[in-house]
Length: 92
Image (cartoon, rainbow, N blue to C red; front, side):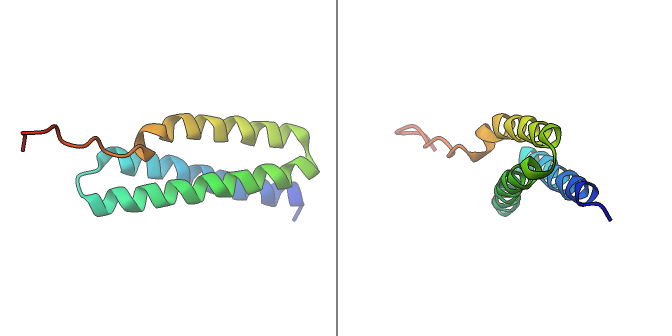
């Protein structure tokens, strides 16, 4: 199997994990689910960074595509990684 094909399969899997964790984090009915979603998102982001480094050795277009996808994931994930606001004083 060609290294480019294997790298593409890994990149697609990491993208699916990232998008799935964003969808799971959007639900957030239970704090445990939110923690799992945030952990999956971080794993996906780090994995995508590794894919970009490896892809840059094989093909520049593959690295650029992965970089654009990673940037989009980062932009969409910023609200899910932000801490929850503290309750206002005097409210329950």
